[in-house]
Image 1 (cartoon, rainbow over the protein chains, first blue to last red):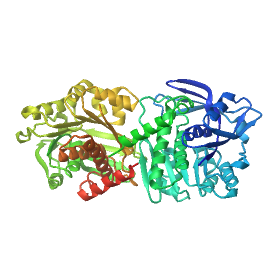
Image 2: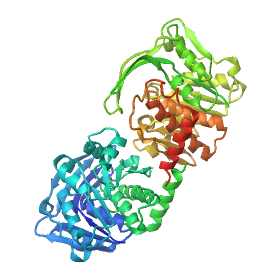
Image 3: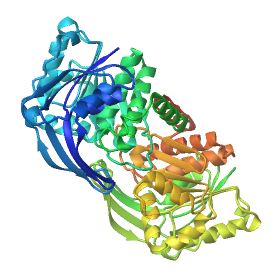
Image 4: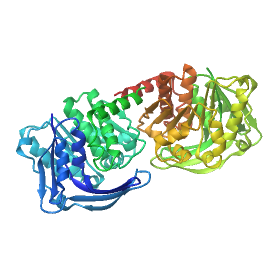
Length: 302
Length: 302
């Protein structure tokens, strides 16, 4: 079953110890879409400026991503630039120019209403709530997942809590989970988050993998160890693409499926890190993904 | 089969956000011995001062730890004190008084020669080498594991490399592995360490679990997620106790056994963190260990 994703589309300028990419295709919805497109059909809702290169639209279409909801507005595309430090675990934002993204008001094409799987990528939680209301007009989707960031935890906590009551799974970074829950212990933080409403929470730990908590189960996933990390930008959104992509494809929320979905999340996150922008993620095949999934299964087997 | 361990025995004064313990039983060989004693017989070689409380010797004996190699010297026992910060991931050493440990020259009791399993806990690599020469007089042990620390990596690197050529498995912290290999990427660091001679390397990542690398295999172990960490002191040595303990008990270095041994390592490390000094580690039963091992198996199963 297909997935609707709403989020940012950006042109990123990124510098890492391995090189630099200027005005490269980025944004939470973009990474998510390309990663998820390896599993199922994706419908993308977002906004770009008139400067958005046609080749990027082509890339999305090449991945069968439905761009009917890709709005083009007068002005410039959202731009972000940052530098990664030598150990790749810390990054410094150099500039954020929201441009047309500043007044983004997602309009869900009519034909998308009633869609069964929704991913609310990292945008203002008030917009995430509004999107959910729009798509739920013909009945609530079967599966809704949501990502967020420290900016919203700090400035829009109540709005975030409001939308969380409506979602199945929250995806959140380790440090953000601790900040959101006001709790340094991760197990306690996960429990506090679950008490807010979502059925499950995925805590992303970067190179240390991810944890999934629900009221009845817990799953700890190892990350795929990379011998060289080129650019971690978008790894969390690619994780979400693998996670939601597999759930949408399999159509089941069984414990076993959730575990496999989290594992596909770590697999897609690892591919993302192997190239600047979407260079690696857009080149891999389903066989590559399957091979890495089996490798992860093997090296975590006790 | 029994294990010989040579390392430090200390009286620790530790402060964490959860409380304080003064002059409590500590030291690398102590934590290792008590953890490993849940799997097999342990023979402890170390030195204490005349101030070493008899109750601590009693505790060791209660765990069937052979103290024939526990030397008592005129003077004070090695003392360490430190404070853990709120997030428990960083600790500050307040004082280190080596006392009788400063001139420690391990003497292996004759009856221990020919022993099949040896753990060289974190002491000067020159002493580790000397111990290995002593115990190898009647033939090399079947299994030798070694732990070390940043102090030796920085000041006795050549001695460390020399003894590493003689051991089966090196156990090392993540940050120490990177420092030792001069390599920020953990996969590359593991390969560089393997090139120095050991058949395997266990990289301990604290709350993020552990990695095992050999030339032919890789295993990623999750840590047992604790809802409350009381005192992480000795967790690495307890990990080693579970790891070497299980290998000695099972008597096999098969891939499957190594994976289980690493898992028992994370299990014993987690128990250690649940109490000050050896309070938790000395109270658990084999059933408690088995239960946690099965839990780890379950929550990592894809």
